[in-house]
Length: 100
Image (cartoon, rainbow, N blue to C red; front, side):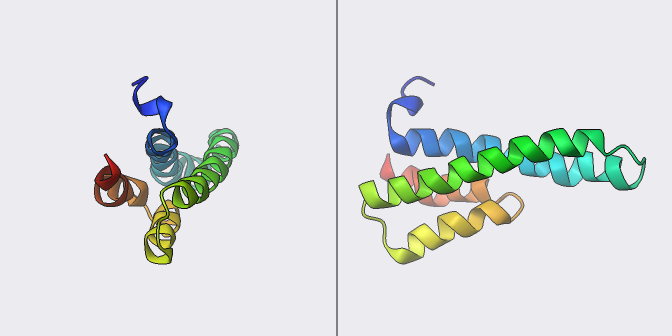
């Protein structure tokens, strides 16, 4: 794990994973709690954490894109992956691991 955190690409992979999990928790846990069981508290807390993780992910994608001289297509795919369910997991497997 410490090897992953020693590079900007590794940090992106870790934040991408956590951001992806937080997005899925919002979609499949906190949103149903909010709208079906009328319990909005979990959505507020998880939503704030996800928002911060999303911002960190976008910043890291831009930093890594500059550092590794990614083309516009690869950078765009990495950014779009953050708004699609399971997208960051796909990005890790298809975009980020090619740099290893």
